[in-house]
Image (spheres, rainbow, N blue to C red):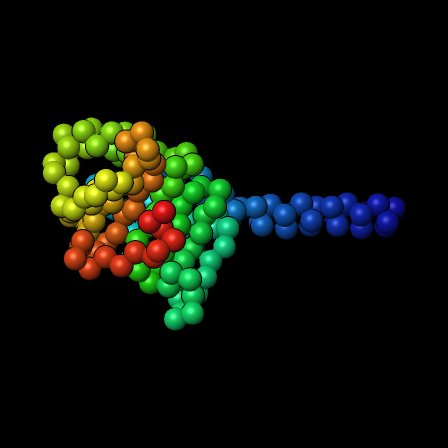
Length: 167
């Protein structure tokens, strides 16, 4: 009888322990607020610890240091979101499946003009819009549709993008 009670206690404890581990691994629904420049209320200029506390489902992170790739970051591979913490911007990739307050992925540049006006800077493959929080950059695929975008708390004159981002 003692063996059965011990076994049940171990099962109960392991079930509670695994539930606690899984509790922090799911961010729930992700919403990008394009007008406020946030991901579930998290701004690109938050420090890495603030980001990890508010969005607990990160897959990996890299400390901010001179030798870090792109100045450190918090990575959400399954969500296709990357926070570049020293550079104060977040990249939302084409595989992002959450919601946005303004549809961006898959949209044409003409669709943005109605909502954002003329871009402050542009090139054949991207456009940068000055926003109240900083800058919104959209990248286009070869069909002219938005494939990814960046939200930064910095104005266009102060942007410093990692070379890996502008692929």
